[in-house]
Image (tube, rainbow, N blue to C red; front, side, top):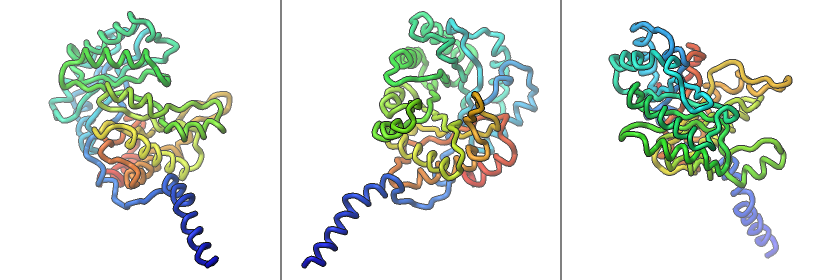
Length: 330
């Protein structure tokens, strides 16, 4: 009888302790290729020169054709940053209307969003007048200049960030039907994971699911900036991206709002000799492997996933596009 009791206790231990740990840390996996999850709703951040400097028709046409071939639908065109009063001088985007009109000659499927933002130390959005100026500026960019929407990149965003949420609400209410409100946010950690993480990383403060869900009330899409984390190991970065994909798709309602932002640039911040970015680790190939693994995991909710977003167009080499197409398109 004691033998059977040990067997029963062993089985109980597996289900009560080991199985939950395995499920949370690993979980059941499928093995579908990336193209199974690619619905052609991917995004890319585009550098400022396209709205400020003269570009030829051929240059714009080549850009549009390239993005279309890689199944990019949303282009975040750098149009800011905001001045401290919440405005942007017209000289900063003097070529924007021309760019948009020419780009649409080559195809009307791509959506162009004005990428605007600023650091909070230079933009006090707690002031109602400044928020009003931002709303007026973004409305002008959509209604008069011709952008299909707005992509906010205001940093940092805090937990319970009432000023930022108020700005999103006002912007949403000012937008005409069909316009897109997009928001860039740093990585998210569910509250229990965040609590454990901060036991070791006292200075780090990742966002929780709470602020993500509050932003999702107003935003049509959320692009998580899943890069520049100082990760030195490829497998750790893949695992990190895998879990970001799982967590975010589980937390945000099933309406295809989540874009996972992946880096293609080569240099990050280096403060006092401390590097925040290792391009041989944090890159498109490793990031896509993480995204695909996350979407193949039974814990993720694929219906919440929109696509991936590449940062930055100018920094994306032919080799990186090849990896992108191999893992995500073909």
